[in-house]
Image (cartoon, rainbow, N blue to C red; front, side):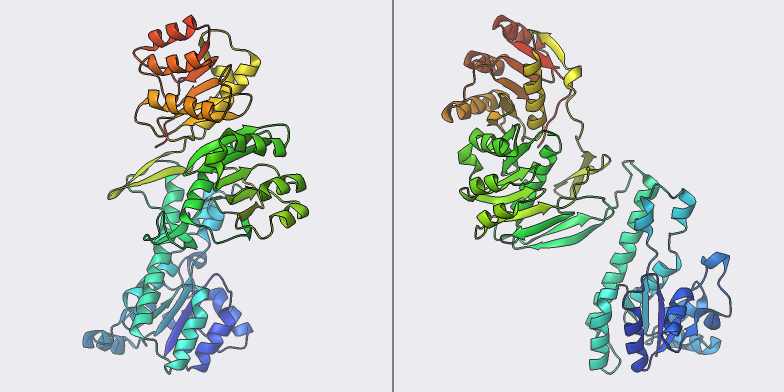
Length: 509
C-alpha cells in the first residue's frame, strides 16, 4: 500500500504519517513534506523518484505527472486500468493526504502584489485531491488534519482498510475543500463586481438548537474570507446557547449600532429596533432606550457600545434580556448578572464592517444580492425644503435617519433628544406606519410635541404628515421624490413645521 502526502499545513503530520508507516504504508511525499518526515526519521520516497523528474518551474510542477495521477485514478475493478499500470510499472496509491496553499490568508494583504498572491494558487494539490475523491471507491482522500485521528483509528481497526462509507465521506470533504478554494480565487479575481455566476463559501460556525420555530433545523454559517461577521471576535460569557432568532436580532442591532458614536444602546425585538438612544453615559443610554418602549424591550437583544459598569449591571439584573452584547463588563456587573438566563456576549475586538460586503436575501430557488446600505445620512447635505431647522433639530433628524434605515419598511421613526419615542414598522401603507408610531408614543407617555419624524421613503399623500403635524411633530425628514411633494411641503409649511429631503430612499424588507 502507498500513501501520497503533500501538505502545506504540517499540523499533526508526523504522528499521522508514522501511524500509516506502522500499518505498512509506503510514504511518498513532495518537497517540504518529505523533508519534515525525513527529519522525524521516517522512511520516505520522494515524488521526483516516482516521476523521474525534478521539481520544475520553481516548484510549480511537482506532482502533475502520469506516474502519480495514474496511480491514484486506476480502478481496481477495471482490468484495463490494472493492465495499463502493469505495462508502465506504476504502483497504485491507496491514500492521498493533501492540504492546500493558504491562498485566502494572503489574498487580502495589502503588502503583497498580484504576482505574490498568484503564487499562492495551488494547482497540484487540488488536482491530487480531486483525483483521489473521484476514485474514492479505491482511494481515501484526506484533506484536513482534523480527519487524521479518525482515519488512523479506522485503519487500525479494519486492518489497514477504510469502509466505503468513510471513503465517500472523505471524498465529499475533499470536493468541498477544493470547491471553496476555487471560490476564494474566483472572488479575488472578480473584486467587487456583481459576477455572472456568484460563488460564495460559508463554513458552519455554530450549531443551533432549531430555526425560527422548533420544527426547523438550523445552523449558523460564516462567509469564508470575510474579515468580520456577526460572531467574529465574540466570546460568550454566560447563558444558554445562541438561537437562530438571537443571531438574526443581534445582526440587526449591530448594524444599527455601527452608525452611533456617542454612548448608545440599541434594543432589538424580532429584527426591528424597539428602543434606541444616545446619551452622555452608557447608563443613561440604556435607561432611555428601554424607556422608549419597555413592553417591547422585554426579552429583547440589547447591544451597548461601551462596557457594562457595576451600576448598569445592577440595573440590567432587574430586566429580562435574551442577549446582552457589550465591549466589556465590570467584574461587579458580572456578579450582579450571575444566575440570569441572559446570554452575555463580549465583543473582544471590534472591527469595521467591510464596505464591499454584499447583502444576500434568499428567495424561492434563488438569491437576491445587493450592496449593503452602509452610508450614514449626510446631515450637512440635507435639503431644507420648508421651515427652519435648528442645530438641535438637525441632530435629532440625523439620529432618526440612522434608525429608520434599520426598521422594516414601511418605516416611521419618531425621535426626541436622541431617543426613539415611537416606531412604526413593516406596514403596507405609510400612513398606518405613522399612526402606529404616534399611538405607541402616546401609550408610553412620550411627548410628541417638538419631536421629529423620519420616513424611509417619500410620502405619496399628505395624510401621513398631517397626522404627525397635528400631534405636534416639529420637523420631518424624508427622501422626497413623490409626485405630490409640493402638496406635502405646503402642508408642513402651513403647520409652521420644517421638512428636510435627503434624496435617498432606505427601504429594508
